Length: 151
Image (tube, rainbow, N blue to C red; front, side, top):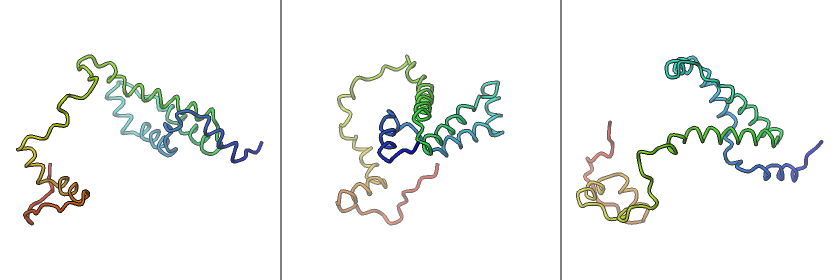
């Protein structure tokens, strides 16, 4: 059955959360990273067992099916996998009961910086660039002054 461009656009628009789908090579790279010797040693050390990397492979295949064949079911399965992965990644954040989450920013969140901090800020690269972007004349600096920091 041949699909017209209009049919393809309708298929694409019928997939909610399509923005969650990454570029296909990313899934393949994640699978390769997960199955590498280095990753396997790390998994064994951290978890005491090897991690199942099969989901990355399934995601890679589903991504290819979605991109090449516009398979809506593959896209939906891929999006569900991304949602599950995202939920697992944010689980610790949602379970956090140590810190109280704010309902709004602090009252003085945009107060001017203290004088000593403002003076330090005026000798930074960011300050110079912000002045340039605003069209203001950049301040004069000692030509020997360095903006580089080695940590």
